[in-house]
Image (tube, rainbow, N blue to C red):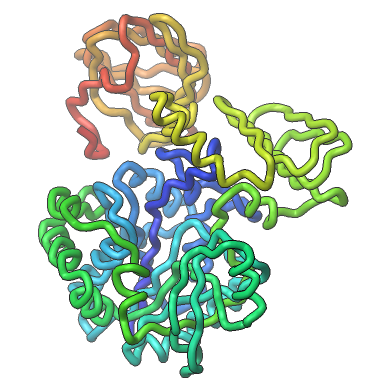
Length: 471
């Protein structure tokens, strides 16, 4: 039976602010040891299993970011399914089940449902657990992977296992996140596992159970898939149909109600990296229990996590602190209160501040721009254009632009003119002038853009032509 990996990449990771933001959430960040992003590590831990190419489900705002990260690890064969809005895991997996079923030519398909933002330290054990779950799933069970708990954790839901089955256990019940005393009792009993949010079941069996318990989800998802359209290398489901779908998780919609739930125990160094203290747990530490990343100097510090992205960070005499530095924000938090970072993000959003949404560096399908400086009627950006990439043919109603090439070669379109610029050369784009920028070379194009005018917002872009399908 064919196994289709389904990788859920739609989370926002607000508790890992200021590194994780709405336009660049944690699954696309290299947070765990190894240098890969969490998405890349999730895909690569499947190497060695006999699987179909992955199906990635993500928000359409992240489509180019996801595609570029998959391309960087040689997985252009992965399919990317775009959601116009988050509807939680039950509808997302329903979309995958419908697509996998329609593509199957040799019977039913097994769906291996994974999150793109988990860390698994022991890949060999993880793959062994997947193999152990196959007979249960093939026999019609809906299998959850339950993590063997290492401590009394109040931040996870739990699964109580029942009688033994072939390679796993029946599920007696799911329980919500407990208080500390209850979590300790769960740990002491030996009957409870953390609910990892990873699953294995056949597409048909999942749809059968979802139709029984949440038929409105299945109906909406069928309409969304029926109206799906290809968009470059992406598949975009029908927007209106999917946004009319009720939001619910797999746990609430199916797993807590089905009579055929099973669990396989997973003891493979799992973490959902849900907050900064979890990342401290995963990191290598010095003799005083400090974990550092970047240009950091510590003097008489202990038990702290310090992440410097862009400049020197020095700390003296601190204990059990989280310090995160980015180009436009610094977080300082007690390690035992990092769950409250989410409230900081909510305040930023309520105040209309951009730091909850995006970094100073913004990724685009053609490359990156970094807003170096801005003030009244001016803004300075450093722009990097990938080899062979091109910005849209566009114009602005309210701003003029000066471009100065730092390195590489730029092909400039300005009105009816087309010409090349190289290092130390510049050009001027007046207000209202039709223009485009392209890198025809083999190395990245770096340039400085100086904008001036009465309005400098990104929404003052009128696109006339765009190879990436943006409007």
